[in-house]
Image 1 (tube, helix red, strand yellow):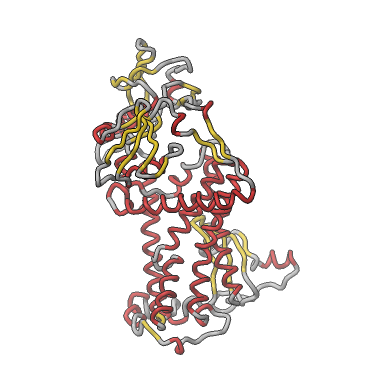
Image 2: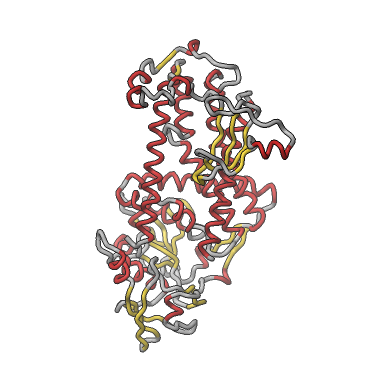
Length: 490
């Protein structure tokens, strides 16, 4: 049931963002009187689940049946709206983005690869050589084509900004002030070597005041030259190392986190904790022979067990690594098999529940606050992208399973909208990358034309479109392959 709830949230969020993204292209194209042939949620290779070009739909709505031409396409009668069966995205088909007729896919005598050298000739052409109808994309000025291609990206960022604004207006912003964190922070051994102590309260990174703790603060620490903490009611400034890697800092034991006393709040059904009869009043004193004093220790110890899985491990190796012993109340020893995610299956009582501060926003106040929230999220996301090109960062890349796992196990509208806004920013940023077949690739070509006053030939654009699709397919296989490896504990 929990997996189903996560899946439903993921599908709804992605469907909403895909439709809004494509609306950005659609309305920009309509603004410049460029014909939009198709508007599809999901991909419709070979067939679609629904189409306004379907004869049954046209009969139902009283429209004439679509006329199918000899090449299999339908004669244009406005925009075809539909839903595909491959839930990997969506698209709008804009007339004349490239001249597909320059390469005849039905020519059995020539393959794409044999035709490639000829297609790459005359990469750059003069603008006056462009031929086509007035309603085709390629006949419009470069600045109009640039706006059309950036329409989806702009819509993604606007969507995130509006969602954040409305979330702040509806629920406000709840947090625990740094000075109210009386237990202070829990630090890793590396953090202690850098000068921190358990119980320190982080109040500044460089000259930026830390109002409350979040993972974003950890990112600020990784980029800071100095960090100021409150230690025994005195401010202490710590000089940070020059080179810090956020991925290393986020590995368990995490570099810095809120110190949470160990207090069992609830036992999850069908969990290892329930199987061994763990009770809310129990106190876990050791796991796998390692003493634990707080909930941070529990998390760090379980994470260290996950690292005992050897390279090239199989399912049996993963199962063996998940088998351990916990001691309860200093006297009771229990053998337990952890979940594939190396958890026991209990919820710890969150500290500072009586010290939560909620900042409320009026309707008009929420908009600048939403812009600030969206900007902070975007800059944080962009900063983390530099780690994707490292071996450790590439291993963290995830596909649909990873995206689905960020949603909560129970329906929570507040979290749903915050995560949808985050995905909208991520989708916008990914699409702005200058990869052929993405919006950023098309925008790059239009920008090249604006600067050089020359444009790339349709043959060249068609070729790079193919290569761009191969790149995207490879990235998708890689990301979802990482998810499979994580599912099997490898």
